[in-house]
Figure 1 (cartoon, rainbow, N blue to C red):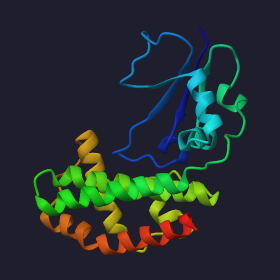
Figure 2 (figure 1 turned 180 degrees about the horizontal axis):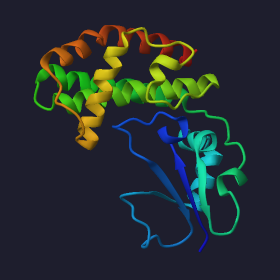
Figure 3 (figure 1 turned 90 degrees about the vertical axis):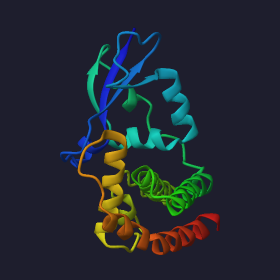
Figure 4 (figure 1 turned 135 degrees about the vertical axis):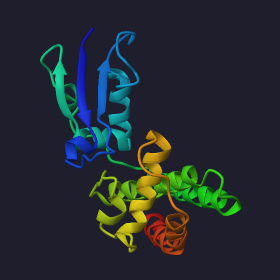
Length: 207
């Protein structure tokens, strides 16, 4: 069975800090019982070919930012797939992540219980919205700071994205100090600016 192992994500962008994990990909054909799925994202070769044909954002992410670590047959499988098909789901994906942001904000507005989780989802909605917009524009940015780095950046203090990012790390990895009430309010005060920015970019994507 051919195996191809890759690193991707923040380590390949040089964005590593104390809260970063190491994203590893295993490309295989057949059973994966000997690969630790807690450490690797495991994809069948054929599934990756399908993602390439779809122009899926993950295909573009791997195409632009993965690095080969090991190949059992001497072939760089991802390189052999060439350039992914054009990304065509910009409107659908941007709407999906704008909806995630709004729904998570709604939960946060109802109760402070699970505030960190809801802020984490607001971060995910904001970051992925920006990434999908950047892909639609043809200038993909996969950074965790993509809202500040795309062609039409989000105009908020960097402290806002720092709070949302910390919420994401706390929620998914349990790393860091709990958010204070003031930090939660910093994030909440930024909501009108984020929503206006999303509305502006959605209008552009919808044409």
